[in-house]
Image 1 (cartoon, rainbow over the protein chains, first blue to last red):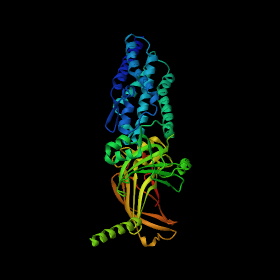
Image 2 (image 1 turned 180 degrees about the vertical axis):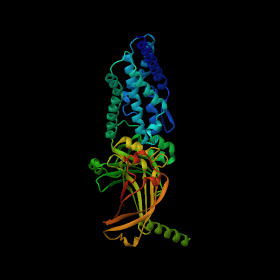
Image 3 (image 1 turned 90 degrees about the vertical axis):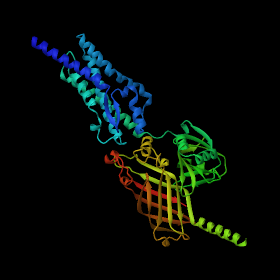
Image 4 (image 1 turned 120 degrees about the vertical axis):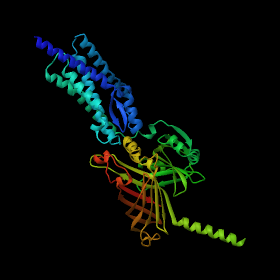
Length: 300
Length: 181
């Protein structure tokens, strides 16, 4: 009986250590993305995707569900509740299982996302990019589930250990498939950033460079003016060009489905076009400034 | 005074003749295909490339705005233009500056398809490399069309990364160019 009590007591201390380990490691750096340290708490704090977006151009593909990441604040909260329950000599099983499962889900997300960022130059090897705190956190999470009080059978514990990573993997794969299958939103449906006259835009680009490029690059622009030239390409695509007196020009490329509409336009007609501005370059061949547009359509 | 007028007249005349010999286009099509069996997404076209062809010297030049290569997938478009790949903010255009070898074989005044070899310097991401590519010059109805298909080694232009190592991006993308002058 004494031996059982001592054993139970040792298990309680170990359980307590795992709970404290989860709290401490949660606030430590878990991964290094090209020298940018990301803490375990950065997902719930909203920094995870802001770092990946600002450093590697990979934003949260589902910003509408950002609120769901607050769930991960439950990890330190539940681990702290576990500590209180241990102190009060109460059952910890439910909170410990949830804290452990959430922790393992979060570590899995860091692992999977870091693998994606490697393609963007964030590092070479996912295991060397993950910091000791992430490994320790996963270890504490497994330990917290295994030592949860009162002790349940091993199959039940195993289920709680694997459920977090399995759900994280499933959710991640669904997200990945969605992102890879995504196409650009139809230009006619996207919000316009700027509406300008062709001559004004060309003038702005010819008088500036970097600042103007930063202003208009990847922006949705409606451009009004009179085309100076219309070219039809052998594959039934086409381009419409607006040039100024210096022969600098803005050019829109159209896909095959716009062929008939483009065909009806003649140089000098007033038109209103909508497209994504790719920015301007100075052409050494022509000695003029060239502003290009992609995914273009006629403005309704 | 008469000599001065005559001099400027000759200059103007010569400029006109040279201008006719130098053909240009602002709607050349350049395709970039880095697809692999693992990933069909890294593929794009730019239909607003600038090209020029000098019928007398054989000089052939191209420029294409990197950011105007249109990919179907928004994420791949971002990656292509990002710092680690083409870095289009710092290196906004690809350029080619070359010459047609054995230009005398090309008859610009006669309809026909002429196989040519073009040698020149391709500049990608600020790195210039000499390349030699096969192509065709097609003359029909008084218009010349230049076309070529070739591959480049991304590593030659300082473009490396895990996506290439993992087989998601071809290390040697296919480039095709078609320009109707």
